[in-house]
Image (cartoon, rainbow, N blue to C red; front, top):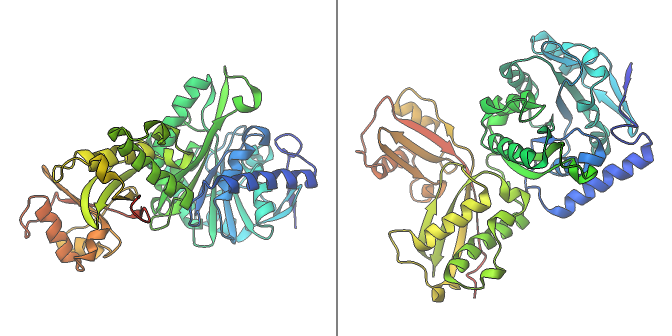
Length: 455
């Protein structure tokens, strides 16, 4: 049995085991106190790989979002110093860290090699910190887990996605090791990193480049994989090296994200309460009620800065009082909810504007949408067979016609055939209409509301 030692112990992180354990533990405890992570179990994370004094707290946010015990952890990182083709795993059986040994899943590595998806190349790992900086967090949390360390060289995003899908499963956590922009001024870095966040959160894999993130190929591979396409993204935190150095003239950007199953509760109870306050605050400010005390969208916590689409529904006495939403993520979730709350309160053509006297009686409900995914089909019958009753929201588009049903519509329409017919009618089409260029996209939602109308 051969072991690989951590070359960057003593530089990127502390070499003393007791001190390192205390430092990693402190990062994880601080992350737990923020309440940033979602209620469900994250299936993959983006974690930075700089020295811990620069980005350890953000890595703590990433690992703090993993609330389950994986059997295997796949660690994917870019090669910074060694040029090669493909994806590479080391020849050793174990990784020795200051916190103890981590076993390498050799059978998984060999299966990747047999499939032509990765190969053994020690030189890719000998001087690479992108993998090693993740290991103390993994060893601290799951000492008995097996790891598959993969360094990305010159490789296509498609091969990266195939390798991820070959390894992903219900007992496997995927760690995407990446920093963001490099050596820009702080203002320029923040602009670039915001753009990167938007691309990542919208699943725009093709637009991500090495100018956005050194681990762009890792991120692309995840977003293009079947495993990644079945998830939604939550921002946990962002920052840069200036917080440690004080130098804003040339910084490196960092970020932490978690990926949750489409049907999972992505937002924590703390984030849900904050978002409901944002919605009510937007309406209150418009009415001139306590404007200085209401939360502003641009001051919302990191999870609510995630680019996402939403619907806001107002009810009064159990009756609908307004509903407005968006289908595509064009701004932060906090901004989207604030805008849709104003739309529901003052611009829904079915209702008069909300008054100050009504506000305390109104109950706010928020629906957060996942990214929409196209449903592939060759006939109406096949399309109907691919619809998941009770869970799918649908967007229908053909020509100049477009209509959307949220999943809650299933409460009154149980059969997919009837659901699709009603959706066509909403789009202004005959119930029997069908055309080869008709498209359907599915999405899932996370729905929550105020417990009671505010008194």
